[in-house]
Image 1 (cartoon, rainbow, N blue to C red):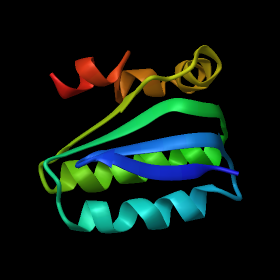
Image 2: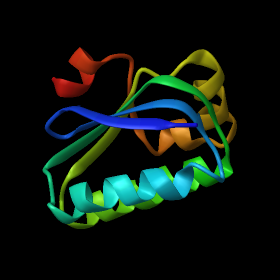
Image 3: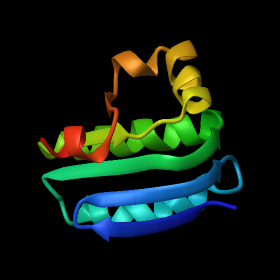
Image 4: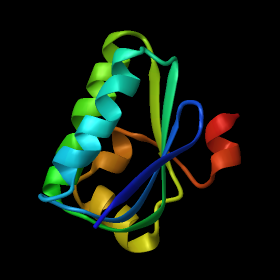
Length: 106
C-alpha cells in the first residue's frame, strides 16, 4: 500500500508500490496540488519500490497538467529498479529526473 505525504510545499513524497490499486488514490492526492497551480511540483520517489504502467500514466498526466499552466514537474530519488522501468519505457527522456532533493530544488 502506497503512502503519500507532503514534507514541504511543492513536494509530494511517495512510499511503497504504485500500482493499479494505488494510482487512483495518488491521483486524488495530487489533484488539489495541481489545481492550486504550484509553480513547481516535485515527487520524492525514494520510498517507491515498484511502479507499473498505471503509475507511469498517472505521472504523465500530472506532468502534462502542470506544464499546461506553465509549471515545472519533476521526480527525484528513483531507486534503480524503478528507474529501469522509466528507462525501458523511455520516459527518462520525457521527465525531469533528479538524483536527490537538493538537485531537484536547484
